[in-house]
Length: 295
Image 1: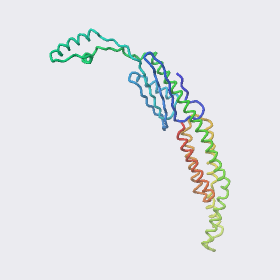
Image 2 (image 1 turned 60 degrees about the vertical axis):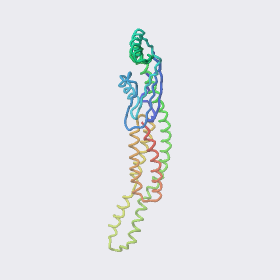
Image 3 (image 1 turned 90 degrees about the vertical axis):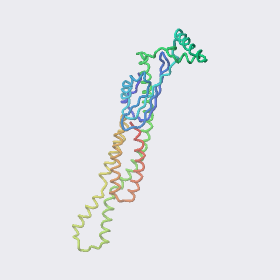
Image 4 (image 1 turned 60 degrees about the horizontal axis):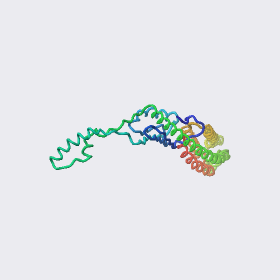
């Protein structure tokens, strides 16, 4: 059986397709496998009743190469014409008995009347032996291997796209980082101007006022959020380069990145940063959509 391992390096998509055929004594065996996005591993095996005893083994084969996704396995047996034997003696006896009745009612005996009696034509039974089982499992393994290869091809394309999109987000976050030192300064200026407009005069102690202004300005500092944002972006790139089953980790990192950029947007108050935050969120949403396809 040829099955690609789920531990194969590189990024894998959760969508893929594989097909394989095999020849058995009675005819051709065709196995088709397709996988779609799903939070967990969900399997559906569709096969003739005569081979449903192989269901557990096929499911184990799927688990060996896939960790996430909805996987559907279709197994088709294309039978050749079966050998059959006609019981001539029984056919003649049935015909003779029916002819007596037919003459009595003025009718004729036809072939379908004789065949309706049953046990006239007997076919050999289909037995799924070890040889046929081996062919079925071989075809299933090859189809699964082809599907996994397809998933990795799709995953490679996804990873390249995500690397490109993350570069764009990094450019935006770098721009935010350059502006970060100006946020407390601008906040301080705005507070001083606001208080001046109130014309408090000598009603507030200058030193006390200075402390309060400094504290308010410090609350707008986004340095920590920018640092964490950069760290999460680095972790995202490292996960992509490492490959493997990383879909859930990437999804978690996107949530963390989203949290930091939201905080930056709410704390900064600078129009220049607000514009960059909007652009960042737009790009991040596209990244999120792509990550939903990764195993």
